[in-house]
Image (cartoon, rainbow, N blue to C red; front, side):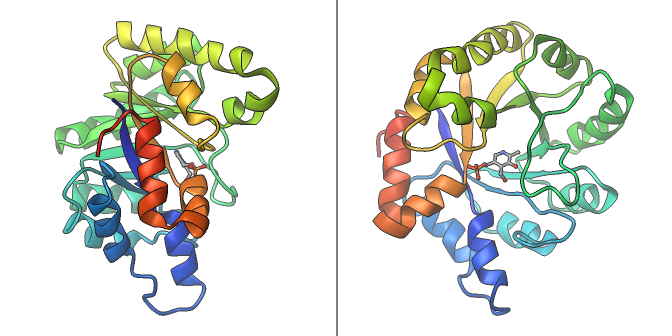
Length: 240
Ligand code: PXP
C-alpha cells in the first residue's frame, strides 16, 4: 500500500482568483481526508499564487492524517515550517518564477546548504524529504545530507509513459532499490495520473507516498472529489 497525499494547491489557485475564501482550503482538506486521503500537501511559492504561507498553520490545526509542506527552503518558508511543525517537509529546488517544479536537487553541488537546512528541521521533529531525479549519485548525496526520505520527480516518467513506459520507469526501479538499501524512505510525485500511476507503483518498489494534485483535481471536475480520490486510492492499493 502507498499513501496518497492530495496536493490541494489547485484548489487554492481557484480560491485566489476571486479574493474571498471560497473554495475554503481547510474544508477541502478535511473533505479529502473524509474521502480517504492519507495526507494533505501544499506547496507555497514565494509569489503565493496558489497556497499561501498562512495556509500552513490553518491546515496544521485541522489535518489529522499527515501534513506535507513542500517548497524551496527560502528563509520565509523555513520560518513557517519551523513554527507550524508539519509531519513532513519536502524541499524542492524550484526557481521563484517556475511554473511548477521541474527538477530534483543536485545533492552534491548543494551539499552544505542541504545539511544546514535539514539539520534544524530534523531537530524540530519534522520528517524531511528532498525532491530528486532518479540518478544514483544524487541519491547517495541525499543520504549524505541527512534526508529521511527522497521524493522522486516523476515528470519525465509521466511524459514518456505513453511511448516508452518500460524505459521510463527503469531508472526509478534502480534508484528505489539503492535508496532503500541506504535506509532512505521513498515518496514520488509530479504528473502522476490515473493512466500512469498503477504502472509506476507496480514496478517501482518501496514507494511509501505519492503526492498528486493537478490530475486528481482535474479529474474531480468530471467525477467529483470523492470519486476522484477513490479512484486514486484504488491505484495505491488502499481499501476504503
Ligand atoms: N511534488 C512536488 C515537489 C510538486 O511541486 C508538485 C506540484 O506542486 C507535486 C509533487 C504534485 O504534482 P502534480 O500537481 O503534477 O500532481
